[in-house]
Every structure is written in C-alpha cells, then in structure tokens.
Image 1 (cartoon, rainbow, N blue to C red):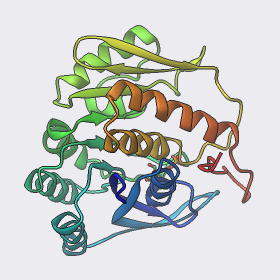
Image 2 (cartoon, rainbow, N blue to C red):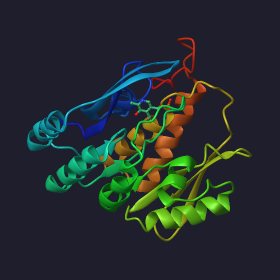
Image 3 (cartoon, helix red, strand yellow):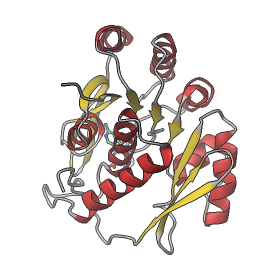
Length: 261
Ligand code: PLP
C-alpha cells in the first residue's frame, strides 16, 4: 500500500512537545508517512529552551537531498529555520525538487522567550520562502514582525494583516488569533479573495506547548492527502482543539498538547 508522504524541516525539541517531534506525531495520527530534516537541536523541556544547536548547512542539505531525491514528499512543512543561511538553502531545495504543497510556520520565538530565528533572518523568510509557499501560518506576533507593524488587536486588523501577508507571495494565509486578548480564538484563512473564520471557544489551560507546530503539521498532512485548503484547515483546527483540550500535565512547567487525543 502507499501513504501520503509528509516531510518536516524544523528543529528538534528533546522534550517531545514541539518541533520535529510534534510534527512526526501529528503526521502519524493523520495517517501519513512522516519524514524529517533537522535544522537545529534544542535542549528543551517543559521549563523552557536550555540550548540551541543549529546543524551545519552541509548536514541539512544532505538530509533534504537524501529524502527528496528518493522518497519525495506530497507536502513539506517548515518550522524552526533559525538563520538566513538555512532559509536560503531550504528555499532553493524546495524549488529544485518542485515541491508542491509547502506549509511555512514562521517560527520566531518560543513561548518561554527563547529565540528560534535570528533577527536578520526575517528578511530571508519574507523574500525567499514566503513567495514559494502554499500556506503560511503566523500567529499575531509573527505576523506583526513580518509586516513591520504593531500587533493586531481586533479581527478587522487581522483581516488587513492577512491581505498584506498575502501580498508577500503565499497562495493562502492562515492567521492565528490565539493571542487576541478577548473573545473566542479566531483564526482566519484568506485565499486572496475571501476570508473564512475558524472559531472555537478558548480552552482554559496553560499547557499549550507545541500548539503552532502541531496545527501547521496537521494542515500539511491534510494537503498531502489532497484535501482542499479549507478542509485541511478545518481538520487541523479540530485536531489542535482536541490536542489542547487533552493537553498533558507532565514536567514542572508548560505541558505539551496531546497529539493522540
Ligand atoms: N522548540 C521548537 C524546536 C519549535 O519548533 C517550537 C515552535 O515552533 C518551539 C520550541 C516553541 O514551542 P512553544 O512556543 O509552543 O512552546
């Protein structure tokens, strides 16, 4: 038999809640064949990121070539890319292998404050990766950084930001409203013409480590299985809502979402 093939190009979270580990668990739960290219190791647990160890360009290139020259991928998700140099490599390789479903989660800062993307790499993300991406999944601080403006506070401001992010080149924008301080957690899908709102009641838990990674990986898995973008984001929203509702109280800090929920 064959399975849809999903590849994550991201950082490793030794604590198992975010990054590569969250992506592979999500790929598996959504019945795809998950593969990984590790851009950086993090020494991490529920208390935070204790160390960041980027891999060499050579090691990252060798992983991408090994996977894409042989197995191929029906969708690729990118997460922590850390530096401009890594972003340039990944963008060139995705172009070289003509990957068709590219989900870019523009990971910048961990919830505990650790930087997962160097400041000068934001321009590379904007100019090299976003123009070739199928969908980008920023949260509000990431969207503000990409657009060089203050963080959005209302759904109307989110809509304007989605339009402006779309101009940077992705086919679709999924702007996550989890950082809105009032009301339900609204995420917006914008396809260049219409807005679709994904709305659920806010779940009252602090155990949300790995939420962004999981949501973007779920979108990639669904696109790999040929879902439409609307169906893919709706399924991903259901998946992440269940994972947060059943998040794990492990360790002494912020627990991870439960991918097996
Ligand atoms: N560690 C890695 C390797 C990640 O890719 C990410 C998020 O994308 C995080 C940590 C941050 O996780 P969170 O902010 O959900 O705790």
